[in-house]
Amino acid sequence: MIGGRSTNFDAVVRMSGQPAQRVSFALDELNKRRLIGFAGENYVVYTSALDLLALKHYADKDYAMALGKLIAKGKESDVYEVLSPRSELFALKLFRLGRTSFRDVKRKRSRSKLESNTWVTSNYNAARHEFAALARLKAITQNVPTAVDQDRHTVLLQELPGVRLSQRPELDDAEEVLSAVLQTARDAYVSARMINADLSEYNILTDGKRVWLIDWPQWVPPTHPNAGELLKRDVSTVLRFFERAYGVSVDGERALVYVRGERDLPRTRRGRPSTRGSGQSRREFPQETRPAQPRPPA
Ligand SMILES: Nc1ncnc2c1ncn2[C@@H]1O[C@H](COP(=O)(O)OP(=O)(O)OP(=O)(O)O)[C@@H](O)[C@H]1O
Ligand SMILES: [Mg+2]
Image (cartoon, protein in one colour):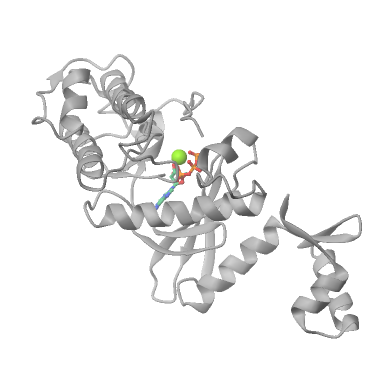
């Protein structure tokens, strides 16, 4: 995949400050390793080269010593495990907006109209946006990952011990877990003035007791023209899932009022999950099927 802006040979020589012969040799070597390519007269930096530069940034800052397994390959990112020299485990999220559709690029890019829509701009902005969002949220809740650092199109996150709620893991107390999700959405709304705008069982991790709300680059403030609709969709998506998977139901309107900070948490009702849910081992769960995510307007 082409990642960067294209640049001609003279510009590379100028920017590098190196003799032309040396630049030519280096570019050939990089091309052999498929880190750069050609577009007509111009050189193009591939995504893999930007990935390596980001890794180098984290290695230089002593956050990364080894790249581990691929934790998840999403539509919009690849998430890898990273080991630090202090044996800490991080999750490195590499943005891949535009991998599947241009709509994703529009969705998670910075909202500034002045910025162009290049791959670099969109993905760099998404990473910066997510880092800033998590820093802001961390000041008011523990139920989001800690963003450790950010570079280029990547964010380095604390690796969370949980699995996606969409896998329907066994929960200690499904009602408590739902309460924690709603309370976190409320804290984000009331104290950080943030609506996730893509909240669902796919963006909630849990270890069976605790929850973490992840994936924030598309967040909107309560002043956004579609804020009401987006918050309602976040809340109803979570409620529908808990009812379906764990048989826990809460009145939707009341939950919404609660998340807006206007009343206490409504009582939950316990029923039978409509599909297989709590109490089963994770291995027995059906293959995750992920419906198309609803998209907020760009
Ligand atoms: N901090 C973390 N610790 C552990 N796993 C994580 C972390 N952040 C993300 N993941 C894993 O990576 C997946 C994708 O992360 P995220 O939702 O932030 O990206 P995304 O671009 O929205 O991907 P997708 O298109 O799959 O939704 C998560 O569902 C989770 O499995
Ligand atoms: Mg996600």
